[in-house]
Image 1: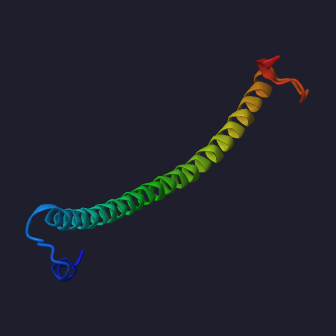
Image 2: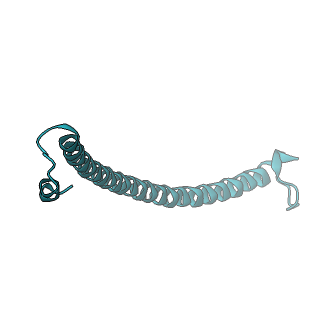
Image 3: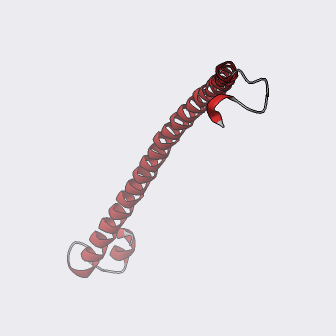
Length: 109
């Protein structure tokens, strides 16, 4: 409500309902401004949290990749060692029994 219009109509805006209306309008306008500011701050905070989460997920993915690489090396080493162990067991089994039959391996049978 504009002060000029109230005065032109002979309404005194310094007390009563017209003053209450002006005061309420000003209070609600300020409340709207505070609400907009609060919502903007919440939205900015949400973006910050999303950024932190994205960085944490990226670090986690890097760790998973490093562990997968290490796991691959360990699995390959295990395969090599198992093959060497099986070869050694066959060698020891054949020399232990003295058998010339390649299908019979030492004390495994």
